[in-house]
Length: 623
Image 1 (cartoon, helix red, strand yellow):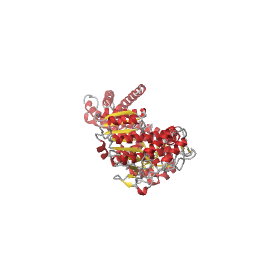
Image 2: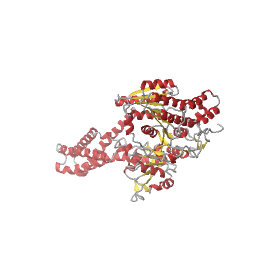
Image 3: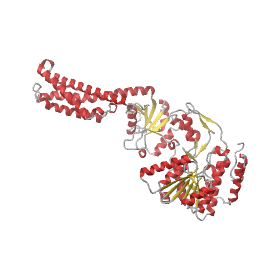
Image 4: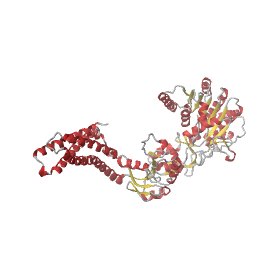
């Protein structure tokens, strides 16, 4: 704490000590004067009364100091604190009864009871009252300031959880919420008052209440709120230009006294339930084995390493060409190992490229992985349109190298991380990933050692290059948010969900499957942009504009996860499907043919070469 704050605190303590001394003295003197009446108090009695008043005041202040009453913050005084002060003060006054016997000029013991009861009663009320007075003054000042400058706030819920929000708003000067109304479903509460503020309802009509009271922020404060109910309430708020926050759910609480008010997270903003997958069998599969992750420093690769690490493999090999992010995940896992005392995992971090066959073979020959999760890939659609040869080098040749060597060195399973853009691709990135899926299926048919599979999923929230970090940066810069097209839709999942899916599919893999997650309904990107703006406490199209800049080269309005949903097959997990296999043809000639791209100068020639091999690929014209 800065020195000036310490001096300020000590100064306040001295003020309270002096105030308490004077109050107790005056109250005790008042009790004596009431007993004697001014005309009946002799000189000796007056002197003794003054001595007694001085002594009892000093004793009271001393005891209050020793019981740390002066450490009490006046802004937090409540019933318990007031009761503590009453008990301490009464105890001191009891001592005064025995002091009376030592002062013969004062009333006898029996008559002194009147003086003591009056003095003790007034003292016990007055001392806590001064603390409450300061609290009321601070509260009035805060409420006055918030009515002028505070964020007009609606609280959903009018019960015990809402009381936490009210207390936080009123006692914390750094809290800028000016609560003006509550909304609840309880018909016994609707139309009543809570914390001197009106209760409206039901919650399904919250949009009308927001408009009427000109609300800027909504705080969801319902005890024992379930995820399902939270999603329903967020749906009511979907079209409202307000920021939404909430108290933590029980499962998120950091302790029994957790009173944080937190932002609604991205899953909740999308109004979708996180996909929860049971990875118990995955742990059984990977525990004590050697596992290799390519692209280990990327968004998906780093989360793969985290989740695989927690299965306690004997050796975990992190392989990536980019050293910075790979170093970050290495250090993160090392810190965790040190903090948790984990010694049964051999963490190996290696730099190299999957299109360098000699380097990949060197790693596999030395570590002999049991399982490989192949996440190394170029994924940025516009960049790959301009550098198609590099997309082919990493996404195609790199996958071919890993798949071929997995068979050579007896890897049990290899799982390719693919994308929904591989379905009827219109861009180089999607076409190269479709080629990579073909490679996986080819080796699955020809390998006697390795089970191969690919995992196809949509966009990953929060990953490097995804729209969410981009939109947040644009909001921080004051806008506008740029959209390629206002009708564009995408499937979304979180990074942990995607990785959990990949690990599950590795469990199910028997040979050549392309696994697809049931991702529910797609999301309109413009709606996501509007929600992120509201979450920042701003109003879309007023504070932050959203402008359309046109589709990027190779970009679709919507992505598909399956070529033909009528022919998909369910797995043991009802969230995971398998695409029906197509006829597999030899790819060795195609690998030789596609390698010609490295010697071509014209981007269009490379795209056409890729299209001649991947028949479902339709290059975007005029790029």
